[in-house]
Amino acid sequence: MIRFARHAGWVFVCVLAATCAVAQPNEPFCGDEGVWVQTLGSGGEELNDRRSAASYLVWRDDRALLLVDPGPGSSLRFDEAGADFRDLDAIVFTNLLAHRTADFPGFVAGSRNADRVRPLTVLGPDGDDAYPSTREFVERLIGPGGAYSHLAGYLSFASPGGYKINARSVPATGQRRWARFGTKDITLSAVPVHHGDVPSLAWRVEIAGQSIVFTGNFNNRNDIIAGFAKDVDALVSHLAIPDFARGEVRERFVRPSQIGRIAQRANARMVFLGHRTSRTLGRESASRAAIREHYGGPLVFANELECWGL
Image (tube, one colour):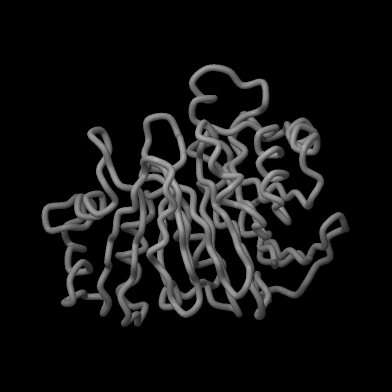
């Protein structure tokens, strides 16, 4: 299993449980064949962690096909990763909070000269009385009466970028699995997860015989992820709180020991830990120990621009 990570213009090629070796500058961050998961951002919403907000790319054969959560910093990382906007089959949101969505208008504005011609599907949770649906959210951002109304053309076939954005809302209540999107390369499904009062989704990606689940932020109240992620190749979960956390954060986030139980029950081949906050940074040993009580497979603490082959 090979990992590529960039630092100061260099690419470090690493093997799990081995020492990093320096590769030549300007080599691809992900392999040019197979399926890869890349961390665009590995942090939360904090301003002092030197990390972009949690965001991910799914690559196949040197093409970035899926963008998960275009949060703050993700558009810069997308460029640094060498991804091509024309290749994206879809953008998905796990929820519509600022640290999951803030760079979305920047992606749209920056795509004007990307030479994309096919429509772009944008998927995310349905809304409720307190939160808009994804369709309404996109309209509020870039619709004719939205905050960035100069981008409204992207919602029509007269788009200045040469392509149309199709925003769709996915049910974020109950426990039913949604599976109504697919291309020749990827199939997507989603289930609602509990993240306090915020409508939220976990996403499962089926691609080239491999499977990846992005849990987003959740606290596992409904115990749905283990079944949704059954026999998954990569479980991408969030390490936002330590096991000893108390109060409101436990209503919103899963604890490390729970991640271990979920991964074990799901029979996940490997686990990636993103959304690393000040509550868990520097406590990796404790988090690893809590997870290892239940799960013995490969465990990765994600960092910026790291890329992992499946």
